[in-house]
Image (cartoon, rainbow, N blue to C red; front, side, top):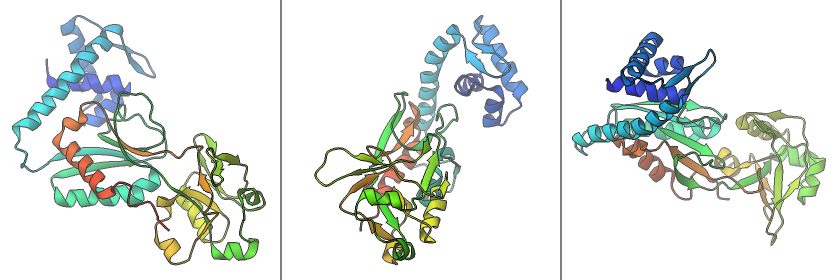
Length: 308
């Protein structure tokens, strides 16, 4: 029984695909299929149900996976243990992050980590779609939002602070809103994600709950940076976590914060930002090192939160 076969089996079980598994390990699909078939013959059990569109575990396969996955994690940890703590880090680390946060902050930090550890290769996937870190074989996932009870290990980076703002040119034409109700007469640039149009919530001073504010506008996008560019061009008002603006737009007077006495957000309660890891992945020296590096460089609260 080959260790590589067990790794193929674990990945097929997570991804539900022989094709994705072959691509992940850089081998022909026929190799994955043949070795898993040989594993089933050796065990005398069918581990996978093969369909045209997906592959799923049998009852025996689920039981076998539950035993094999921890064993592989221990093998990886044992291999790491043979290497001294001072030995150079090497290998591939796969990271997933939201598009804007990843482009603006995570990618530069990964480059800095690679300068310290030149034998490390990084595979960075940027998407605003909710991905399954296990199915996509991610070592570290940067996640904004509520955490599902998925068995993942999570480290919280910090909360998000929202800012409502517009350009001086827009405000000179349309005036400054004095309350959230005034936003109904303004052109609000809205993010459109998987769950539809972004809703804006505001909490009046001294209140405990945020109330939704119904706003509309003539420009919507699934890309936050495009909406910020629209605000900078004088097209309307935006509400986003402060990290997406960066400090220079305010320092240079290109954007003006609005309704500072109100607590605004894009959700009833702003989501935290987390680092997620599959169970056992932090036993890997390289993954643990990158995790610690990201947490130290990002800070708590995160340095990317704009403080005005």
